[in-house]
Image (spheres, rainbow, N blue to C red):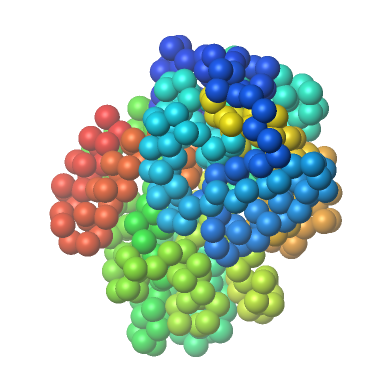
Length: 427
């Protein structure tokens, strides 16, 4: 697998912070350190998987957990709120108050650096050996997860962020061939104009985090893999003319979107494509489950392709689970991590969620046509880190970019100010 800048990006964004971290007092023994103890049978699993295919995937993982560890009781600590923003806020409050859940979901990559630097996570490196994960996770993924020689989470999946989902019937009504992928953003804009002329919403989006997801894919398309990664490791100047062009494209794309966007979350925006009230939606590939759950078939009912101009790039993100310092039931949390990393757990979870396994020993034939294409892309394309989903930047940087984006898309700033605020957010 070809990796462009993922490990370097994580390092550049904030892994230097980890020199002061050690994953908490408990080290890598997986026993939860000082705060651990006999937590009984309950295992609180804290996520933002509260609806849609995300909830379906969590329920599938819960079922495997019940089979593998029948002596333990899964407690769903899910908190709703776009891309985990509400969950992360509540989680930080709990961690600072010394009231951690037994395990919590976090995006693999730079997002974890904040927790590691704060000494809020246990080192789970020994569990990789115990569970045999070093033999079945790609080395490049393990490198991404390794911070200062230690690993702090177990990934449950791999997702792709730079995917366009489209309704072929709506496209045909606008005179667009659904099988013809636009060559670049400019060509896509021409198709969006054709759809808009028919009176149908051309591009559906939802609340701020989905707009940031769209932004990152435009940056990928216009800057290329090296240029996009350079935004996070310092090699690309946020004030450059190339970034300005990308932001102009983003502004134009937003002009084709639904006016009620800020009151929606991603399932509603994706549903617009399913229902034919929108032509296109840019969303991570968890969206495929929304189509499949409603019996919408690939090809006839929907088409998918990389955001025009970003072909050959795989916008990478991975959900992962941690062992917090002071977990009430560290043994239960360790059991959950075992299930998360197991072949049975990864197959069940990813079949339901639309993502692909982090493990390399899963049979592609067990997954949908789309997922098989994602497995192939992950193996061959340039892997670049997602901004909106924690792989590219720490939480503080993402929050600042999200604030600037919300301000811009609601008319609170012009493009020049937006570009300045993005540059300031990354520093």
